[in-house]
Image (cartoon, rainbow, N blue to C red; front, side, top):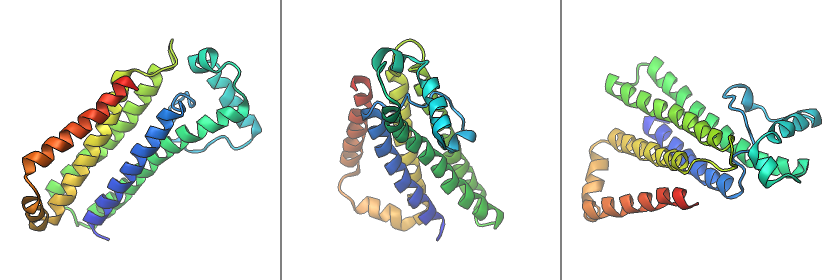
Length: 208
C-alpha cells in the first residue's frame, strides 16, 4: 500500500463520517454526549451504573429538560449510539491517518513538501474535532439546538478536508491525474456544478 492508497482510504472513511453525521443530525442524537473527552471518551458506558451516570448528566441539559423530559434510559441509549459512533469514527480517522503518516515519515518515504501538506491535513482533522465539540457545546446552554453557524462550519470543514485529500491524491498520481482532469468535460462547468452542490448542502445547515 502506498501513500496514494492511504489517502484514498481515508477519503472514503471521511465520506462515511459525513453520512453518519447526517444520521446523527436527523435522529437528534448530537447532544446526547455532553462532555468532550478525546481520550477517555473512546470507551462507552460498560455497565448499568455507567449508563445511569451518563443519563443523569444528559438530564441536566436543555434537550432533556425541554424536549424529552419523559425519555427512558433505553431511548437515551438509542441516541447515544449514533453520537458515540460519530465520535468514534473521528478518532478512527485520526489513527488511520496518523499511524501510516508516521510510518512513511520515519522510513524516509516522504519529501519535505509532502510532509508539510500531510501535516496540514492532520491539523484540519484536529480542527474538525474541535469544531464538532464547539457545535455541540452551543446546544448545551439555553436552547436544545446547536448554532446553525457552527453546524454550517462543521459541515463545510468536512467538505474542505475531503477536497484537500482528493487534491493530494491527484498530486501523488502526478501527470496521469492531471491528464485525466484535462481529458474530462470543461473544467469550469465541473467546478461550477461542484461549488453549487457544496453550497446547497452547506446552506441546508441553516434551514435544518
